[in-house]
Structure formats: C-alpha cells, structure tokens
Length: 468
Image (cartoon, rainbow, N blue to C red; front, side):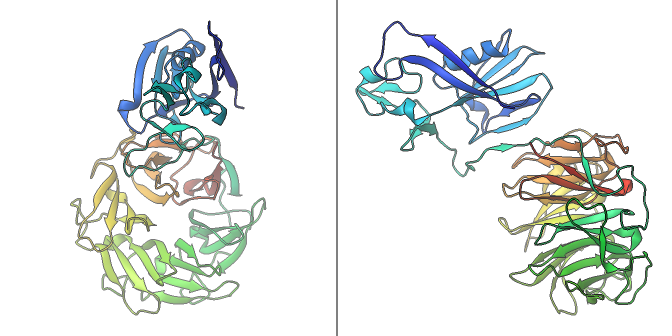
C-alpha cells in the first residue's frame, strides 16, 4: 500500500498562487533505498530522529525531489534526482524512500512576474519572472529533471517478492515421471499464448505447462521419459527457443544435436550436429542454451565442452565460431564451459555465462574478445560482485541483466552499467526446498510484467517470483 504524506508550512504572506509551501510525498515499500543516476545528485546527509523529519528537510529544499531514511542508522539522505532518472533498490528492512509528487497546478505561474511565485516551493525568480529551479526544465506541464547525455529516461524498481510460488513440478521438490512432476528442469520459454515450455532434462522430454494447471503435457520426446537417438526420442534436452508459430528449436544435449520440432508434431529433425561428440564445425560436445533470430534464421548455440559459441544458418550443414573456440581458459579470447547466453540486439552482442570462470561476459558479434560484465575471472564467491558457476542469463527491455548464479543458489540482477548484483531470489550459499530458497537454479525468464520464472533445477520445480 502507498501512503500520501502532506507537509504544510503556513506562510505569513498570502499568495495568489500556491500560497502554502507544501509537498505531497509518496512512500515506497520498506526495505528500499534510492540510487541516483549520479552521486552528485545527493544534496545532503543528516542524522535525524524520524522519517517525517527527513521529509521536512527535503520539503524545505526546492531542489529535493527524493529522499530516503533508515530508522536503524537514523541517516537521512536527500536528492535532486527523481524516479524517472534514478532507481529504487532493495535495502535494509528499516529503510524507505519518499518522493515528491508533482502537479501541473504547481507550475501555472511559470513565466509570470516573480510576485506570483516568491514563496513557491516549485518555482524560482530569475530575470524578474518565475522559472524552473536549477537542473530542471519546463516540459509544457511542469518542471522536470534534466537528463544526462545518453541516459535512459525511465523508472526501474529492482524488487521482487522473495517468496516463490511453484508453477510447475512439485513444491516439495520431489522428482518423477508423472505429468505433474519434473526431473531436473533446465530451459524455460513462453509460447504465443503464454504457456510455459520446460526442458525436462532427466525425463528426456519437453513439457508444456498452461498457467494455473497442475499438470503438464509432453510436446516433444516420450511421455514415459525413455531416451533414444531416433527422431521421436530425446536424450537430455537443455536449451529451448520458439518461433512465432510456436515451433521449437532445442539442444538435445546427450545426443550432441540441435533439433527442430514443429508445433503439434510427434517427431523432430536434426538441424545441427551429427549425433556424435566432436569439435569440428559440424559437431558439438554437450550443447546447452540456444538463441534464435527469426529475421535472419540464425541460431546461436552454446557448445559447452568445446568452450565456444556456434552460429548456424538454418539448413546449413555446419556452423561458424562466433565466440571462444580458443580452448578453455580465462583470457578475454577464451571461454570456459559457456552454458547460458542471451542475445542483446541493441548492442549486437551475446551475453554469456562463463560457468567455470565464474563470470558473465559480453561478446560483440564480430569481435575477437569479450568484455567483463559481472564476476571476477577465475574467482568464485558469494559477495554482490562475485559469482559461483553462473549458468542462465536473460535481459529485460531496459538492458538489466539477470543471472542464475547456480553455485550460490540465487538469482542476481545487474542493473545497467553495474557490476554489483542485487539478489532478487534465493539465499546466497543456502540451498533448500522452502519457498524462499533455490537449489542450483538454471534457466530463467521474465514475463511482460517482469515477473521472474526460475528453473529450480535440483528442486525439480519452476518457481515464480512476482515483481512488486
């Protein structure tokens, strides 16, 4: 629930416009703090006795648009940065953000004589007329903050419910072959009707799970979980993508191939790989996650044990190496067991989970090396700047990166340009079957509301973490 707090400071002189020096302040949920786009936006820091007093400090400063207060430390911070340029991020349970609410009514004196705004909180007197305060501009309705060059104009609250809801498989983590069970789910994708497709690795099948259903249906492989090499059998499916017609492309890992399976079909066809392990350009060794670009009919395949990413044109007999391929290693021209990846079309690059190097890297297509996004090459750990065996990765529309940090049993969110992650699901270093825990998560996906779905692999279930 959001609360509106009003500060009213009665002025001695009555004004024609905005006679009360007031602020309408909206509050965030607890366990949050403000992160400005730039540290110079912090106006002041004080130790005060209450959130209300912190709001009073913000109210009396015409530049203040946002503040946060931690009742434990009694620290009040006030900022000229606003929610359309900064972020609300998770913090201690005793911390909360307040932000000034604006109305066009507060700015009707813009460009009027200074007598109309001499005591206004929202306008200043400049050259004998009412103008917007410093670092803001008039947008035709109200004064808003100037943007930094090349900055995004958005509000993003990086906060999810820490308690997951089981949407597929058994909430108690039991595995099985029945239609209401999974056995090591890996990849996740939504179809055009928002049904969830799951690669059920140890059951050698792909399950379709309609939202709210208690059972899934088998859409590829055998219902009984039998493995095999023929066109109707699978052996350890991992990565999965769907095209606009809900046709499936997936990596059949233990068969060292990538298959195409038409929507509603009872068998598939091999479109990449030979069915045997190898390192030639037409072979794979344990292919994992895949990406598909429908406009160009290109598949990108994580060839995990060959430490490379392969690019395949549909119907091509072999692929080309687009990342790695220089042996396993930690240099910026090498990969080390790449598992998950995500295609970032805005930068024409692949975001790659470098599993054995404990890093997430960006490889621009056509480049000879990667740049580091998160983690420290060859160093594992559970701090916000370290990872331990990252396997799955996805992006949101803002460019924030989400990583399944499997060895730490958590999901990390890396905001744009940040190398320090925010844990949004799971508990670092603590695996278990409770609704707040994960056990070696692998695949992850966001819906159009940015709710998070996680393949909680060793718990044999898929968990949904709702975004606030």
